[in-house]
Image 1 (cartoon, rainbow, N blue to C red):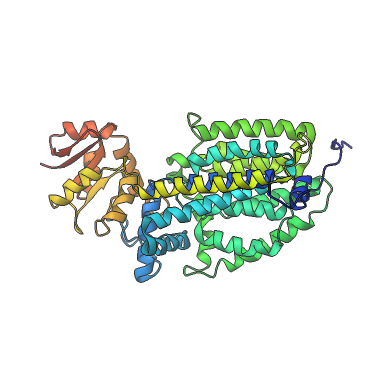
Image 2: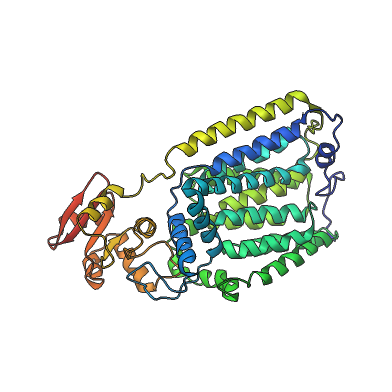
Amino acid sequence: MATILRPDPVPAVGASPSTADVDQPASRSGRSLAGLTGLVVTLAGLLIGLQRIDDNSFFTHLATGRLILDSGVPTMDPYSFTAAGEPWTVQSWLASLIYAVVDDLAGLGGVRIVMALTTALLAYLLWRLTEPAGAVVVRAALVVPVLLIGTERWAERPMLFGFVGLAALYVLANGAGSPWVAAPILWVWVNTHGSFPMGFVLLGALVVGRWLDRESARRELQVSAWAGLGLLLGALNPIGPKLLVFPIELLGKNEALRFVNEWQPPDYADLAPKLLVLMAGLALLALLARHRRFRALLPLVVFTGLALTSARNVAPAGIIVLAAVAPALAGLGHDLGRERRPIFRTAAIVACVLTGLVAFGTLRGPQTDLATYPTDALDWMEANGLLGPDSRIISRDYVANYLELEYDDVPVFMDDRYDMFPSEVFTDYLVLFHGEPEWEAVAERWDADGILWDTGSPLAEELVDSTTWRVAYEDDRWVLVVPR
């Protein structure tokens, strides 16, 4: 029978030399290099999360949070004239509520601080996941590309809570902390984002990997058991057990999801997927050469495969690749960063002060970046009486998200909640998106008062040349037409 070749024994995951050495330094004065580097990584994560708000999904989440504060969690669509009254599962009700409460207390600046603290926690967990690698320089080399992926993919949306949950479960499975912590992690994850099945995919891969390595999976099974309890407790929410089956229902909407960019294979013109493919390739080589353990290989292969089929999985795959390859890099360097020196403490203070100054300066500026939204066109429409409770304006889906927040009494045609809208609405939206000849029939079917669309699109040319619609407003990026 074939056997798995193994290199020289390496310390168990969760009890690496770096962990022990950092926790038991040779000197008690100052700060260690490993501690300083971990602090810098955490501060870098903080700055990534401080970016100005521009994500269209966030606008609807915040608007929904305000509805929850006013009247409870909605069960039917409150935003559109095409799906009014349709059942709607608010899968991220807790995230929306958090956004709304913080916005009510401290404005959008407060929301940005919450996002920054979340990304700082995620960066700290990434640093913890590199502990089996040992040497500080190796650990830093592992973290940097994942942080670069984060600059593109750690957006201000509820999936960010899922990234934290995924990293935290891996840390627990590696032996750090108490297994019962997995229960509250899963409860929060279930109620903030529908990506929580990823946690069980990870734990399942780790357990199977242990069994294939003919090693005890006791720790992984403990964490899995507590995570399962957290999943069951996740049914205790304003929506009920329905929230637990939402991911299954969402995947059943394949007809709509296959046209959504983030559900398609990644665009390799972007930095994040390039970095992920490079990381995964190098990680696979390192694992095969130095650490042939299924416990590391299975999660890497599974999550890299998920990322190659869906762009939304690039960020979580980066977390998994980092954690999977860390044990294979043990012994590549000898500076474990355990020695404490006063200069490292001084450097830590300087890093905190500089980060604070950058954060303060960033928060004093605009809280949002609305360059991609038709703010001038909407101001003109409001001034000319085209935006109101009885308006029927057709617009791009991401513009509708913005409308739901800033013009809460204006019904929209379709936003990015693709799982909620009836199929005929999504079909009509595709007709508009591609500028097909039937666009006028769509506008007539929905009794549209106007169509607001971006000028560089196929539909814009049709709108301008139409004999039954006239241009009421136009700038260098947007055109609004109304019936003649």
